[in-house]
Length: 87
Image 1 (tube, rainbow, N blue to C red):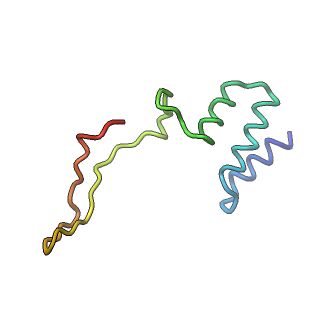
Image 2: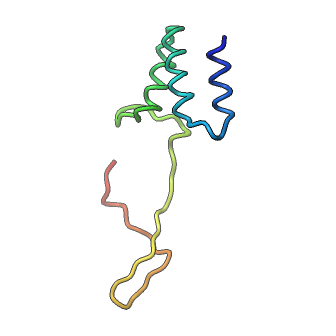
């Protein structure tokens, strides 16, 4: 199937935007009537809803740090408090 070959070629081409391959994947999902693939590609293109189960490759953990100046005081590589933030 030419559409599958086009998708693969675009995924291998670093100059081609990922969205182009995803839009073609959306067409493929529609043609083969694969709702699971269509849901996945829509989430990748539009973003996942809060309630959606994120795939593992979309999850990350980290400890944000930053550099700050307060008057004459300079703080480098200082942890940024995030305990008060909600999802």
